[in-house]
Amino acid sequence: MPHLPLWAWWTPDVLVWIALAGVGYAWVFYGPLRDRLPGIPPPNRSQAFYFYAGLLLLYAALGSPLGALAMGYLYTAHMVQHMLAAIAVPPLLIIGLPKEVWRAVFNSRLGGVLRWFIRPIAAIVAFNVVFSLMVYPPVIVAMVDSMAVMVALHLLLVLTGMIVWWPMISPLAEAPRLHPAQQMLYLFGNSLAMILPLALVLFAGKPIYGASYVRPPSLPMLGQLGELGDQELGAATCLTFVHTVYLILAVTRFYEWAHMERGLERRVELAPVIELAARRP
Image (cartoon, rainbow, N blue to C red; front, side):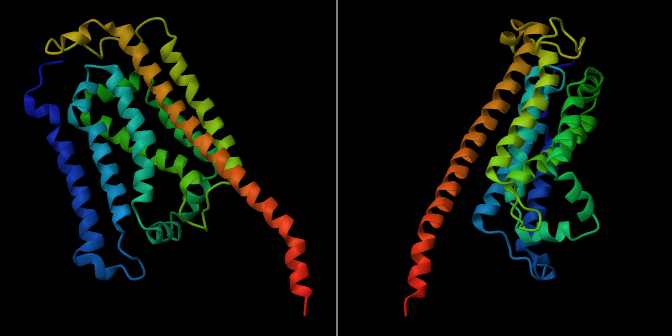
């Protein structure tokens, strides 16, 4: 891969599109289009913060020097892109939009399709089909050779990431999140599904991406890594990050479940007292 000029390391074309998305968010919710959204309140400060944080991480994944490194220099950078697009960006975008927007989406013509995809098994399958596709060697080669393909597939990963996150953080009662105990099983199932494609890369024992990745002379430390080392580091980094996040989520859901059970037991214990008090004249 030829040397990139300094400006190209920041991927200005991706930066422009991300900036336009940020401007569009402000234009729709706070600008002249605000009056055309009856019944939809503007996002509060927290929601706006989460949305713009999601856009910033999306740019970090698709553009920035990380994106430039992923375009033919470093497979590990490519896997970091996957982690940001699949794990970090989707929940921020979901939280960053008012629930009334999501209600309008689910009440639209796409609502039936979306309700089918956010079912736990369907969500796990849809997400992991896309995720597995994006570690398949011919797809990696296509992404390295074309910025348009790389951006399009990562946006698809963000979309399926939002689907797989929805049962855990849904803001809608009409399309509710799972019970904490169910979320624990859901996280376990999704983590198992993600292990197989990453394990195939990690334990391949030989480079499987051909000459797609070369070590840039301007970054001599990467030359020590080698093709196989880069491949193993990328898969191991992704496995570690994803399962650490899922473990933390599972622990928090366990404590949430335990808290709910303690509250239920407390209400059961107090029920006779409340009933007796109600009977008193």
